[in-house]
Image (cartoon, rainbow, N blue to C red; front, top):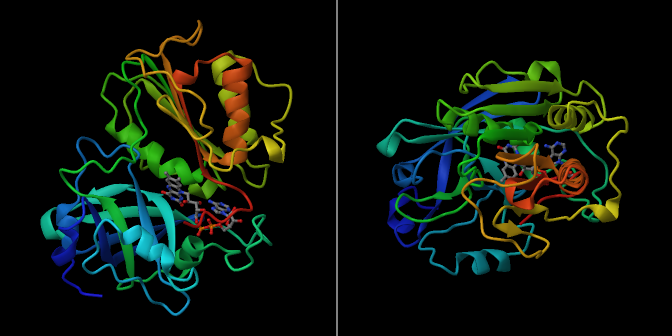
Length: 333
Ligand SMILES: Cc1cc2nc3c(=O)[nH]c(=O)nc-3n(C[C@H](O)[C@H](O)[C@H](O)COP(=O)(O)OP(=O)(O)OC[C@H]3O[C@@H](n4cnc5c(N)ncnc54)[C@H](O)[C@@H]3O)c2cc1C
């Protein structure tokens, strides 16, 4: 692939460009932090704060090769999908943790969760047991190259779900994959924001002091340390909303989980009709004025959705529920 990325990014309203790994840090037991750079990133830009901006990364195929998007136009996706799956590289979704530098020295920082071997995937694919993103992160080194799909300044890319409107109380909930997004949202909040954030991480060593937030926002870390995924998150969020610890553990049947779970005040993956977003989330007392953003493993998010919407009666318009990944399923594109 050409190293002069600018010659073809200009044809697309987004960045679809090869980038170089400029730095790799094993920041904590479950996260590898990578810094991606390249002259095309001079064109990176979001209209406003980055919040939970998502991006796509294409990891090399087994032979170490990346797809060549030189001269790509609007048909790039169709052309890429026509390449046999084991040759085209693997696309996964991540969050922009930070943007460093400027101009041709712009770098995007991404925190990748590393996860252990999980046995055969539920979707029947045996080739991605460890996950392309996970496997790549565990061997990441400066100088390696990836393909990045990211917002191009001046063009609508989407990918920011944080939309609290005029909410008076905020609730952020997520697991380790949502930590980069929650951190970005907290960093970009106005100084007078108030609310609470709950983040479940694999182990104590993943708790980080590198999070900034307004004075009236609290952040609660919930290291699992071997406990069941979502258990602590479920208990803490329900106690926060109701003032009482739940008496039952979270149980969600397989057929209750929407594999593409993505529900925001303005979109529903289930096709459910969605009303227009309101400036101030309405909802019934005691939840009037609350806006909740919840992301992580789909079973856990599904369980929280059931509790918040069905049991506590939160209005769908005041909550964003996002399945960032699903246990036992490879998130291949
Ligand atoms: C909007 C959005 C933003 C995201 N931001 C980030 C981010 O900043 N950092 C980040 O690390 N992830 C993030 N994710 C989640 C990430 O895309 C998924 O975890 C993805 O499955 C990782 O791909 P993989 O190749 O490692 O594993 P896959 O090939 O997708 O899956 C292989 C196996 O690994 C399991 N698996 C996948 N992820 C995990 C995990 N975290 N823990 C345990 N097992 C897992 C799967 O269940 C499957 O059994 C984001 C997802 C979305 C939708």
